[in-house]
Image 1 (cartoon, rainbow, N blue to C red):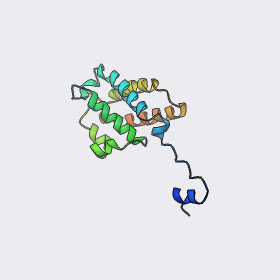
Image 2 (cartoon, rainbow, N blue to C red):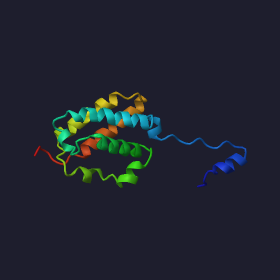
Image 3 (cartoon, rainbow, N blue to C red):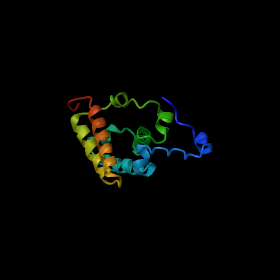
Image 4 (cartoon, one colour):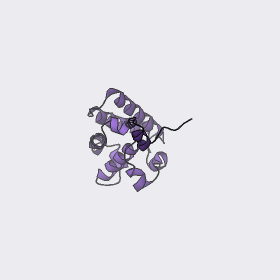
Length: 146
């Protein structure tokens, strides 16, 4: 297998450099999309009697910011989450909370309502919805409310 020439080699050879491939983060609209998604999501969480107690901070902004960083990094954007928080370890980070099927469904309700507010490509939207649904199901750690 041969490696493609680097940009300087391509330019000096008279051939155009290959176009960089856009990341899902870029295709979904970048920072603005993930900020909107998380703001809308936490707007719903703020008044949810099942989910709100899972957020110990009075102000939901730090949690919103962490989720924005995480999603941005997951989809190929800035690596701020990893730089500030380390490996996501989603299951471990959620173990202290009773993530029941009911909590999962409430989380998905608010997250899907937030996705509904986005203006992104329908294919990208479906991929995002699929990921969020799989993530929510994977975090269930108790079958009934304590």
